[in-house]
Image 1 (cartoon, rainbow, N blue to C red):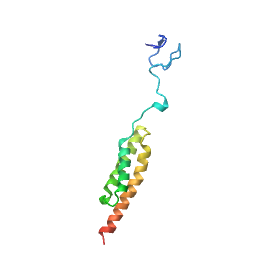
Image 2: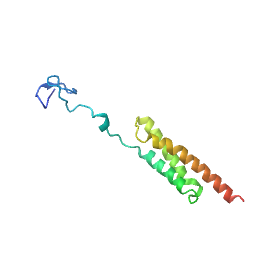
Image 3: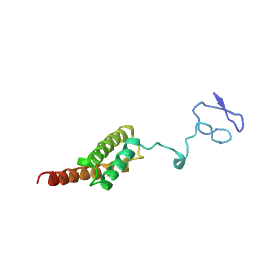
Image 4: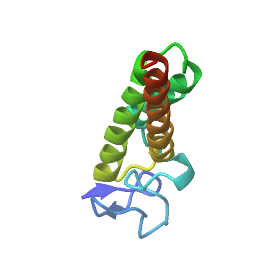
Length: 116
């Protein structure tokens, strides 16, 4: 058993409110606006690499940055779905088509340049 820090009444170990005075205990959940969840790093890096693949379209040989961005975005999305996180899901969902399209455009560009 624990004791209320405000009135000293005996409370249950998992109590959120004191039954005598109604004050919050240490077991109270954080307010929704203050809950911090970490951003998925694979989703973030994948999105950034996909965008860098767009910027370096003519320099990046065979779209390797865009391909890496697509792969990392897919990995990040799988991690987000498995863990139930929400932060980074939009980055992963956006990074997949951006990176995939840029990879395909880079491949087509280099095929057109190298074949003739």
